[in-house]
Image (cartoon, rainbow, N blue to C red; front, side, top):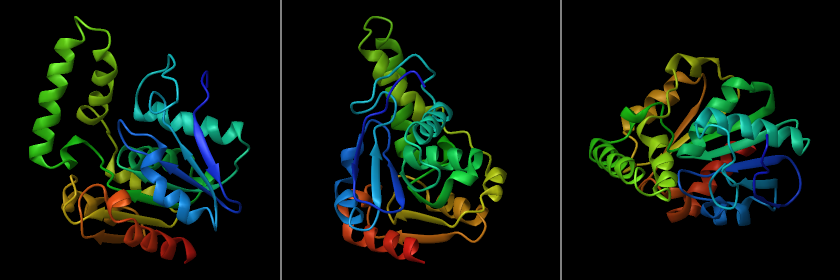
Length: 226
C-alpha cells in the first residue's frame, strides 16, 4: 500500500477493528471505542480517502479498501482480529472475510448490503440523482470529483455474490435498525446466507451505532463474549 491509513487505538487484549461507513471517519465509533477499549485492543481506521487518510492513486473501490485493510494487518503485525463494520465498513468487512478468513476471529456486520438494490427505494433514487449531479459538476469542478467517488461507492457498489457468503465460517453477527436504510429482507438474506450467523434488530434507523449505543454495544458485547 502506497499510503498509511489514519487510525486511533485504545486498550489492550484481542484486537477489535472498527470500519466506518461512506463519507465518515472513525469518530462515528466514539461510543464503541470508549466502551470496548476496557476489554479489547480497539483500532478504529479511516478508510482510504476518508477522514485523515490520504486518497492515494489506487482505485477507489470497496475491493481496494479490503486490500488496504489487509495491508494494515501486515504493517501492524496483526495476525487475527474481530472486525465490526458499519454500512460500507460492513461491506468491506464481508469482502475482507471472504478473501482472508484466517485473519478474522469474529465478524459484526451493521447495516451492510450486497448490492445497491439492498438500499430502500426512496434513498436509492436520491443517491442516483445526486450521483448524476456530481457527475455533471465534475466536468467543471475538480472539487466535485471527491463527492462523485463517494457517491459511486453507493450507486455502483457493492457487488457481492450472496453465494460467496456461504463460505464465511467465522462466527458472525448481523445487526441493523428496524427502520434501516437497508431493506429488512436484504439484511435477513445476508444473515441466512452466512452459516450459523446471529441476527439482531434494534429499534432505530441506519445509525443505531451512534444513536442507540447502549443497546448496540450490549448486543455486540454479548456476541463477542459467546
